[in-house]
Length: 106
Length: 117
Image 1: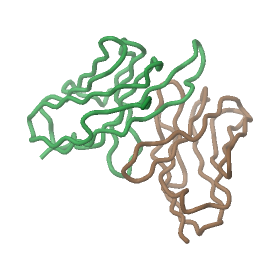
Image 2: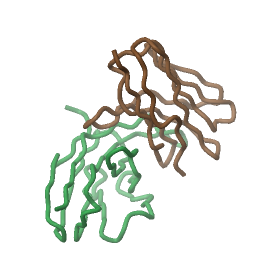
Image 3: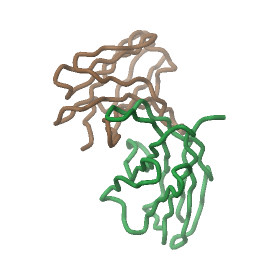
Image 4: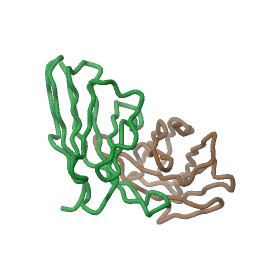
């Protein structure tokens, strides 16, 4: 079953923060996050496996709630290079959410 | 290059023709996925293989679509009697999975853009 992402789109100024949410009606074994730039294939960002897990690199991090039904991606002090569409994917069958289009403006 | 490769990168065909796409996954990956993506949408799952076995096929996949992975290495996706609605980017991805564990990660190929006239 396809996870639900919100918001559908967000526009930021450079340096602002954003949160993208991904939720499922059932507990997930894991959740993956990807970023896709226009005309390119999705690129893996990170995977979360455990309830309550938080991880990240640079200024992009993610969390997985205790019930493993919701994950959030946090983009801090956004840069122009963060622009793109962010997808979450569920485990096993790798269904993807519809995506969140992030635009960072100077 | 040890990434996922897809050929051709672009395909233009006339309605009613058959097309075949090829995907070469990362060599040590045992799982291979096919997705379809249209503008503004997330990747739509089509089918996946574990080694040479096709384990799941989307109900959205009509009988005109068929995929194979004969030796557990490369895979082909064939679309017969193409329709204009088949126009999309077809993405291939590969991954490895520990026994009884989660998918480690998934790497996408550059995709094949199909245009049906």
